[in-house]
Image 1 (tube, helix red, strand yellow):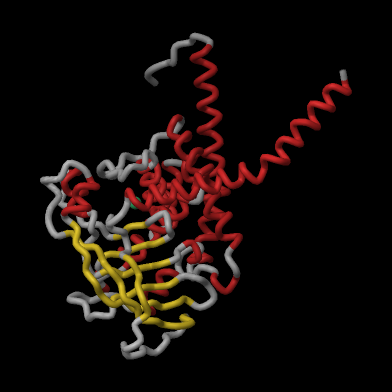
Image 2 (tube, protein in one colour; image 1 turned 90 degrees about the vertical axis):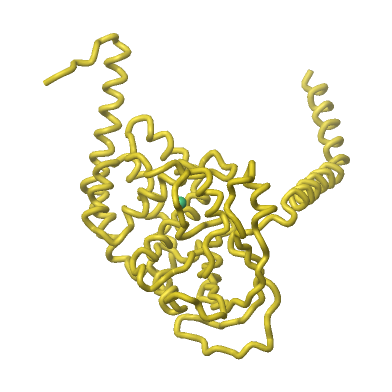
Length: 341
Ligand SMILES: [Zn+2]
């Protein structure tokens, strides 16, 4: 019996030994076909943050400001909306018909000691745009700037705005966008907006964090069963990802927990302790991994909030969870919950 089993095992492993190169080849082929299909389907589709092109050698060099390792001037193809989205049935039809290519030049500032770059249009803007040093200062406030690959300041409104206006019925202009490829675009970052630019950057950074936090996002969603988050101002517009509402809830809570307003941060954490603890655990993990020279300029601030989370919020989150179990047990026993004082 044992001999037979061993012989069978030998035969199967010999089969796998012979077939292995073909299996690998087949898998590679499948990947290539999937990539090609994706490229064909998305051909000509606009891209958030545009398409960076060749280095422009004939542009005058600009001095490298403190905190950057080099500055290049590059060609860029921007995508801009040319009309409202009303006549179009879906976002793809809108993007194909109502978005135009606009070539331009962009200065790419490489941040010293990390792979992040800040892109700023070479042309003079018609508003009071923040400069490279100001953008870097905002980037350095983040718990970990390395999550961002390209931070782009864009003088045009978002190409998705007309579609979002159509779907929501609100007169909306996006302040920022984040993509799966670690690009953050900030639209028309006017100096007069002041701290709103910092909050926008933080919000978009939280999107990048959410993309990397599948497990925490699942927990965050599950927490909805025992604790209701404050309602969003309006339904976020999804572009094909069913997780959009949960990502948006994560970013909105996160921007308050990490924002400049200490009181608002504490109030938000105490109002949704279970969600806050799940999100903050992710932030703490990120903070632990950042090299010292890239540590946030707001680190002391974040550390104080960590202490508050441990002392005041975590016990409350535990109580909410325990209470929930108690309720469930009570209902299972068939006891009616008591109403009134
Ligand atoms: Zn968002």
